[in-house]
Length: 45
Image (cartoon, rainbow, N blue to C red; front, top):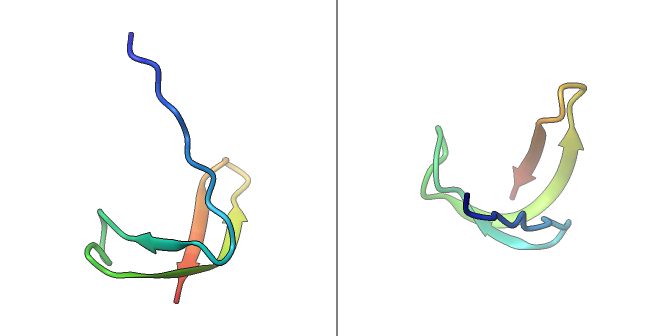
């Protein structure tokens, strides 16, 4: 099985959204939150 690596996103990083409603948008990460279920959400400005 192939090994995967997880990139750590930090506040202030530049990112590009690749899937979902906002696919193709890009900007700066501003708000990082983790839900009770372990899902990470970010706000891109």
